[in-house]
Image (cartoon, rainbow, N blue to C red; front, top):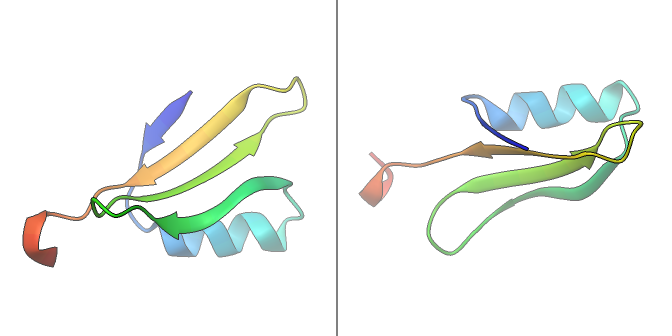
Length: 57
């Protein structure tokens, strides 16, 4: 399951401070999107994504 959000860096820090198990830490893909992944207690993978406009605008 994937959710597009804004403010992903702050959300990443909040989740880490809450002790959430993050399976793929926050990183930026070569095409510009920021992404992190975690799993809920049932094993459902949750992906949080923030897209950067082309050219970083």
